[in-house]
Picture 1: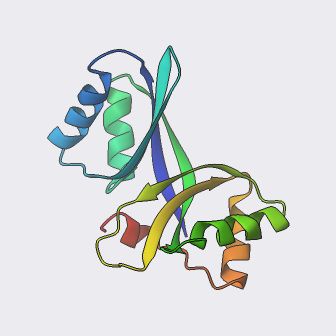
Picture 2: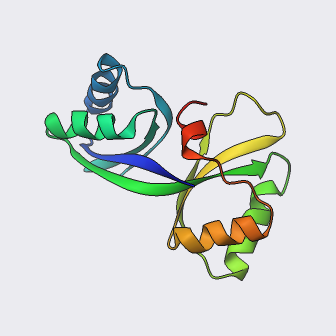
Picture 3: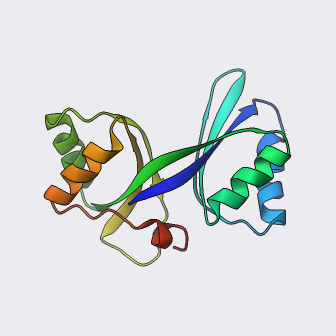
Length: 144
């Protein structure tokens, strides 16, 4: 139910993002979703990659500061208030969202795929299951 996410800490300078994506592409690794957050000095590139273990090793070998984190991918109703309903459920149960970003979905017109990092992934998964919110299996996430 949890998905491996690769995070890379990058200096905030021209070309660093291109270097990372080129390195992954040259190894045949496909980025399925990503988010980039920056400060004045560095950025954090968060990625869902089709072969996360291989991506982690490739980036480590290239001396990037890289981390593997578990995240949860949910199918959220793609309609006004769809995300708000999920967030309200989490709020009412004191589960905090540390960050989230969207995942491209090609197969569905009524569902949005969202990547979440919670302060308590296990509790969030339990809540989603109890309330009929679909949690995507890692094998599907890596191949969408």
